[in-house]
Image (cartoon, rainbow, N blue to C red):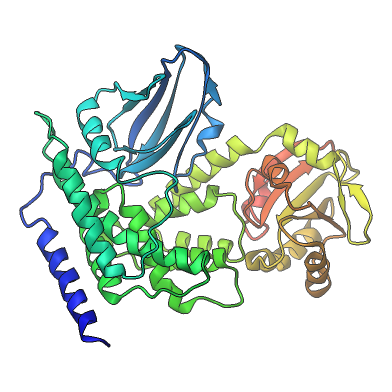
Length: 471
């Protein structure tokens, strides 16, 4: 290793030591909030412009699709409000016509954003702190910018931190600003500075197909910050932790798996070894709730969900289950299920047939699955037992997110105990979501002889509760 490399590491660690607050910091207002006892927080959008305005909003890694509860547009003078339950700060991505921004939402501190023809104005009850946070953070979180592509990552971290501090110091501190805001910003800027070199590493890896190693001074220093309890209250904690967990997990990536599967596996491992022990359950449950409502499909998703769920205390498991059921109920619909039953899908012999809205059997159990889903396979013995015990039940397999050749090969190899098999084409994820309420696998939905939903979704065959619907 070159001597100047050691010098850069020393400088980086010295910077970290110098910029870490040494004085006890004022407590944040949401100090006692947890995943199981969150704070309800409202976010209001108001159109004060002359014309109808299209807008959208979302919170990264939060288990609620804002599109399901917010209108696509607001007429002049109209407003829309949603409520989220959070225990730590989040960034809200807001888009109003051509105005794009990342704005902080703090637990228990309601926001109200007025969209005018010239910009966005905060009018909520916490205008003072939100205006100050926006003035500092909006220029540092430019939406849509390309990541920095330099190769000297230690220098990149140092320069970003210094420039961010200079910008921070140019923003006047308003009189009456709550005492917790300045330390919160200090920690946020530190985390942001370490995200820059990792973003550059990711850009080289995924877009330039080039390996740009991240020095230990970066990953180790960021790890130490993430292990400090006060940093959990920063709106950048989740993003920094995810980047760090993915970086640490790269050393054990499985070359046989796709990029998404490896990345999400690294995240799951990171939560199992969360750096703040007293916050592990809160952070893990938050990530798990997001996974259960995230509609992306990848090979090891179900395994990660089962592992994370098993690691949580029972109270947290119950809270996650309530969120999952609520999200599924919003997505699933009677009309969606009926449409799937009537639509024609490919069968193993190459023909296209409909499942059918009616049947001579008293019950039909639809299993939504995809090739490569290990938990889907583990249910097969329980499915056989169920069919033997209840001859009035027909099991029907509905595959999705699977290529036709892979689907047929999978059926030939594993020989599932279902006489009827169907394949929903790629690109029709919404149809599966509307029928099952989720694209997670395996998911079971039961209908009666008329096609009416008995349970949507249902307990798995391995769960004794399923038989309560049949007895």
